[in-house]
Image (tube, rainbow, N blue to C red):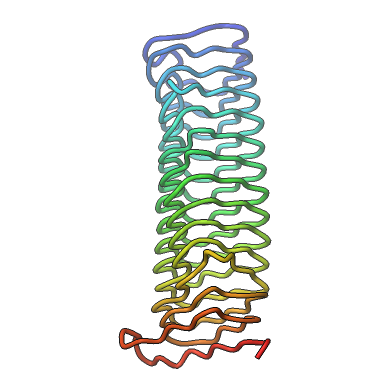
Length: 283
């Protein structure tokens, strides 16, 4: 493997189509597509300032690096990435990629990141300003994760999340086969139009949570006081809630078990079969 150490590059495509290359303490200055169409690349303690440095890349390892804000859209159309111990200040990262392992990475400006990606593994990752994170992605495994950003995980499939704190309005809209363990999810309109959303040992907050769901499962979960008007037009619900629910509105079918409910709203707008069982343990 060729080694490039303690050097600086700029302009357009300075390392285009490189193979079997290791970069150590290298700076990529303003420019475009520094490592486009490359394979088997290692970048250790490098700084990326220019746009689109890793496009159409296969097999690359990135460790202890910095992607500045200028390195926007840095990793697209690529596969087989391992990224560790890295700070990503650039927005719109990771598009149309497959086979990603991202560990101990911080992304403070995660706007429109991780779109159309497949087979994604995140561990010890923190993201902020993460609006529209994980659009149309699939086969995602996440552990020890913190997120602040709205409209996340829309239209994703086959997702497992463990030990997460997620602040996100409109999270998990239109998703399929999502399971969340031991996590906190705070935000309005959680899980609308989802199929097979499963929450285990989770805390849920935000108004109008879990409406229009299909096949919702909740095991040993709690709901914050502001989680009101829940379960509207949801069918095939199997929810076991520990504690109080502020209000439930027009669930279609299934069973909801909780300690108590402040208000149960069943009106003329409920959809058939309108036979959801609501059971209160304290009564």
